[in-house]
Length: 99
Image (cartoon, rainbow, N blue to C red; front, side, top):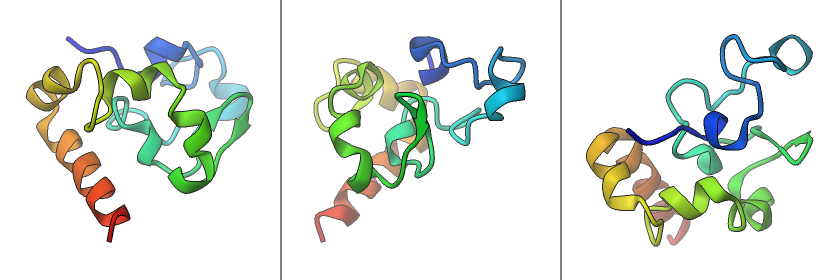
């Protein structure tokens, strides 16, 4: 089973996490834990981030992105198999960006 971003990054913003009272539940929780980079407004590096275009420099060096990127992720095949709907959303997101 693939770990979601909140387990990898240990941000504490998942339901019941230690940062929920301070920062709220992350908008990537619970359904976008393998594709948080396509979600505008995720909390990375201590602050709320914008769209992928705005946060791309952070995302491309992130462990989660390196694991699950639909282009080159180390675990992209497992991501596609275990979470096909989320994977397809990511794939479509990048196809739309190229238009």
